[in-house]
Amino acid sequence: MSIQWKILGQPGADNALFLTVDSGQSVEYLLFDCGENCLSSLKPSLIQSIAHLAFSHFHMDHVSGFDTFFRHNYNRPETPVNIWGPGGTIELMHHRFRSFSWNLHHEQPGEWIVREIDENKVASSRFLTSEAFAISHRLNDIPRDNEPLQAARNFQMEAMLLPHGTIPSVAYRLIESEKQNISPEALQRSPHAPGSWLQALTDPSQDDDSSVQVGTKSLHLGDLREEFLISTPGESIAYLTDFRVEEGSASWQRLCDWLKGTGTLISECQYHSRDRSLAIQNGHMTSDEVGRLASEAGAGRLVLQHLSRRYGTSTWSEMLAEARGKFSKSDFPPEWIDSIPEP
Ligand SMILES: [Zn+2]
Ligand SMILES: [Zn+2]
Image 1 (cartoon, protein in one colour):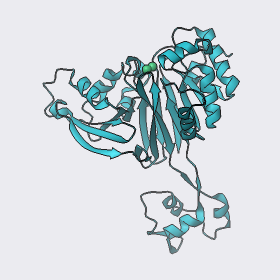
Image 2 (image 1 turned 30 degrees about the vertical axis):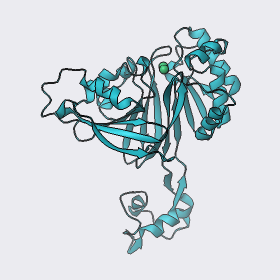
Image 3 (image 1 turned 180 degrees about the horizontal axis):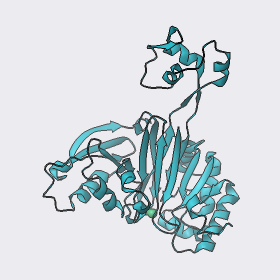
């Protein structure tokens, strides 16, 4: 099982995060934001496999690439496309869906579930391609109650609303389910010879109460799992962009608590520390501030993205040095290494 991530887009241009969550049994693809040209490095078949598109907010640089996504997916057969975003997302998406001429849609497949995240609830609406997206079919609101947004078999997704000037920006955190592995030590001391029965131990479709053939014996799967499986925590990744929290404030502490122990923290890094006043004015963070945030949250590593285009490569490399000054395990995405010199 693993979470693989890739920052889409270039330094100083629009960025997005593409995630692959691979459980060994199934693979799920997620996209966070969809700025201009962000999808150009993904094959159409991958764009058509994205199950969840989660927007932080709807400033143009995070949504300009949506037409490309929509064009590839408007009539996706079988599985719905899931859209997430802050309050107001349902109305915004409805306008986008309707901003095309629809006259050949009646027989087309395509179902879109749009969800908007507020502090206390998630509101949802369903749209159908066969209706030319005309009707917003409201679904029941779901209270948040500190529950994850989405609990899929392989992972759960959480969200936190962060302030971005006068609007909220949604931060997302994905946590892989615990991994179940066969203990080599247990296998060594077992009287049973390894065989096809081992596969049943990690197969989630087989119930604990079922039996499995081990050599000449039929044994209880639950007992075997208890004897042979060891659990290790899954990986975790958080995506934070376009936000500003003041160090030492209650919001800062709340954010650090929420991020506690996150393996990979992907964060905006819009401004150099010398432009802190601009960062405050525009609701963004500076490079030293995100370094400090990663350090206080006990993150495994920090990946910087969404750099201001006002700077050139030498300033970007200074910004990496600033982040590293607060948190040594800071880096730019590996794809950017050739375009920004090491500090
Ligand atoms: Zn932005
Ligand atoms: Zn923004």
